[in-house]
Length: 176
Image (cartoon, rainbow, N blue to C red; front, side, top):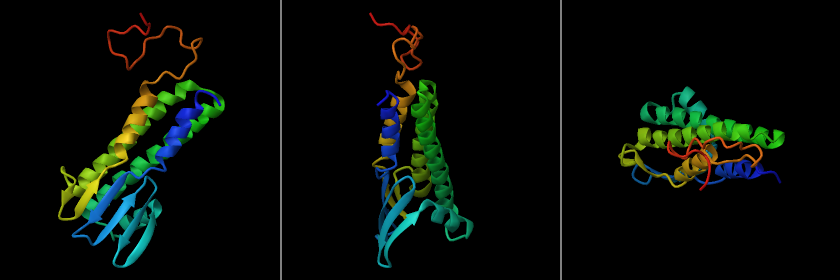
């Protein structure tokens, strides 16, 4: 296992954690949303809704207004997350630590987009007449993204005393 396998595994695990627990309206439906799909329970039955179905709902006009805008933002975040996973897979396969930081920046961006999608849908307190939401996994995405963007994934030989971009202006990249 190389030093770049752990970042790739962590990024893949982001696809497995629930990012959002939500209630629609006055308990008309409840659900859990992951990056690429959501599971929803309502009086009409249980549904597993993949992200491409949400795109069809927007294109078909079933979702409009804030819900359509929120869905588009979520889909953009999901595309960025998949891109970050592919970048980290490439980094691990080619043993290229230079790709980890861009993947981390993409991961932070997708976490911000997921949160912004919830703000668009439910407002600044994440609760309105449309329903409510609890962003349970979105902070995890941002923390993983910060770890990837600021972490040092090079070997000591590769790290030739260059300053760490995330350490602050007073750091020169050396200890002591």
